[in-house]
Image 1 (cartoon, rainbow over the protein chains, first blue to last red):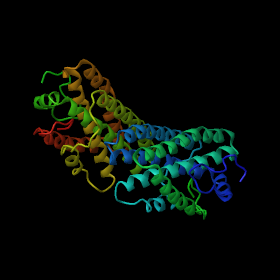
Image 2: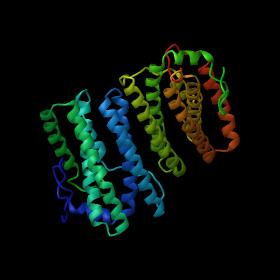
Image 3: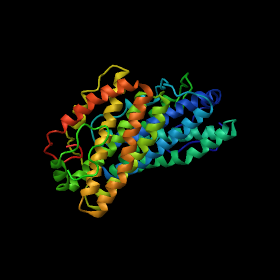
Length: 198
Length: 198
């Protein structure tokens, strides 16, 4: 794909060109899904804070992330408003639910898997918003996507740093390798409905 | 009670003096519980946004509230940090769970009851933080409580306005009257563990 963001750190494979074509042909739907993604990202940060209320570094860092995701949610909703797209429910792609089945239930690996899974989701969002920022034919919207990219990169960095705070480096790297393979496999067949993670 | 905030709008009865004595004798515990309350308030706002994703006025107003609650959560956590109180789980008082049993499950009354219940919780927080702002013997901490009061008042106003956006005024008033009675009844016996809503 003609992209300067060939491959983001954590990700095993780059997004296929078919996704970009699908997304560019459905910009309104992608914006609506993006709104849902930002709300879900805020919800994910908050869920960690509810589940691990005494993990001070986690609570402190994810409070800031939740605030930023809500800010992005508000910004995406302003874009929807300007384009006359009403807020509406949207069936999610299988991406998130499939990833979640790979989170091992017992602690402490549940925390490890959840942090790495969230890091991967943020890394993929970062890559795909970057592609939209480069290829979106509407200059203002492209600029908006580029403005979000820096934060998304910070976000997946924070989830990685939190994993590194609570777990051994070699344990993290092995599990990240496994989950990154799962993540790339899920996206290897383009989901027919246009979504950020189709 | 010697208070200029004798009775807040929505509430049926004022907080009894016994609560203030209990709280002032346990300022550290009250701060820790307050941290949990702010996180739960952010979570409550976000839950509404997840449950009613296409209700634009609700989504817009509660995005702002969730952001503000997270800001307060962060501020309370800084107070904990300064006082050397570690973040820790805390058993909640029966207040929230008991109130929730009065939310009728079917829509649309579920939304009405949830909005009014949350308005009542915010109104009670407003009243009690106000009491701490007046009576806390530590001037800096008292000032902090007073600084939060204005927001808390706005918050219960927002939940009331949202009820007013989606329901008839007379329906709201009747249900508010019922739930406010429940709310006051729950607090009529002081919970033995010091909490914001003991």
